[in-house]
Image (tube, rainbow, N blue to C red; front, side, top):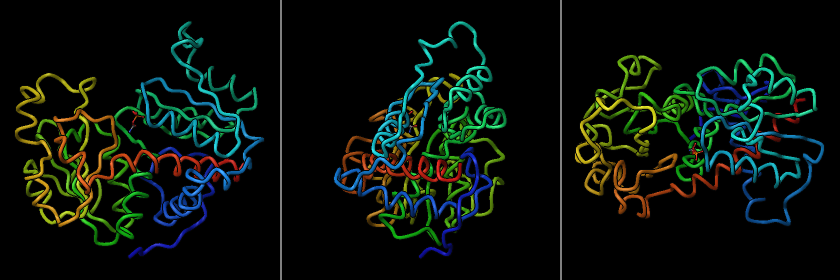
Length: 314
Ligand code: CP
């Protein structure tokens, strides 16, 4: 079902998926498939990254992304530390640039950065020798999340060519949606974005071919192979985006009734953290179609692959 074969990934960093080729994405997914068996089987783990030093820099909160990078580094035998931004000299006013350059001089090989500012990982990458991985920058991209989403889709459905993916919810604030749109369309899938018109910027339909926008979630889900819910981002949205959560759920919540519009057996996905009962009903989250917790596990495999690929090219 895949129209692309793997091509080498030779870049210093992983900053986004907008410019990656289908072949590069398939390469990352192929290495992640090799890595996944090491999660369940400690006997297959190795210490091949024992000479690598990795640091995570999370200027915004995280559970899944940070912990899965920590686990990924540990499973490959790397030295991996979290800087702990809240207790670091960032609190004394040290800039991102000075923080990164100091860590670079200490010999860090990979910096994993989450930052509220769009472009922060790109800026850091230009100023350090270390490889930089974007763990989410503002409303721009969250490439490792989209890669684990693609890994999960390929694992379950075999590939991407001709797939219909519906992404529902707060599209405007979603770096996950943007990275998924870039990667899925690069591999031959079509994407429909749906949510309140106040939460989808008008330019999203033109972001790539094979992307459409609607505020009718049943139309978006109709005949879909994958239904991906997005979190309502209370920390980023303005109060004017919709009247209240009850109303949001009534019009845009993914329920069993909404899922009946999709293909039989369509996958239910969500990047987490979820507002249970808001963007997805509890029944849908816990249904057999849901792969939400498998996504979290696959995140470890994808991040192992990225640490391996990026340190191999250094
Ligand atoms: N999906 C995701 O990025 O989750 P965290 O914010 O917990 O890392």
